[in-house]
Length: 204
View 1 (tube, rainbow, N blue to C red):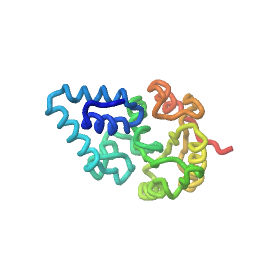
View 2: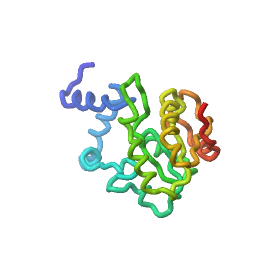
View 3: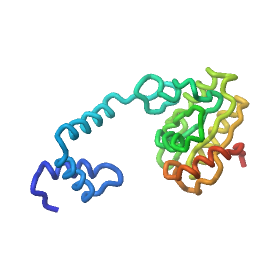
View 4: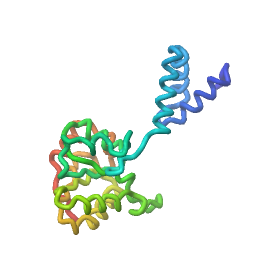
């Protein structure tokens, strides 16, 4: 495609770098921004710069946060006896959207994947173990809310071994989530029911 403006071309190329956005959609977005008041484009730019430069990670659960503690960890209304383990922040948002869970979270930052060179030491597993050691007697249950993929199952198996000495109830979300599916793409009703009908994690 030949662009009438080098500036438009540059904007389209940058927007098209975003996941799920092709050149045609990027062009529509760029032209839409041109039609909006300058203040709106400036507000968008400022919010993106703030997101990139000021975002932090919660020192407790590793979730994205504005401060040292995220809003979930600092809330007095959450059930602190249950910790839900998830792969990343997108899964926290997906579960929160169901309004079926009122405990705390721990974001692992990925799953074990030998093919991609990701091992246990690359995840926030040691931070989880330290967290449980610091709050002995306070946490009663850990939910393994990982996507039902081979990597997710491998991670769950490893976590089960690491957490066994704590004598906690270790459960996993019900398999209403299709095998090989990703948690973030599950509909809210299915995901909510999977949290509610979680079962004890069993090693084969």
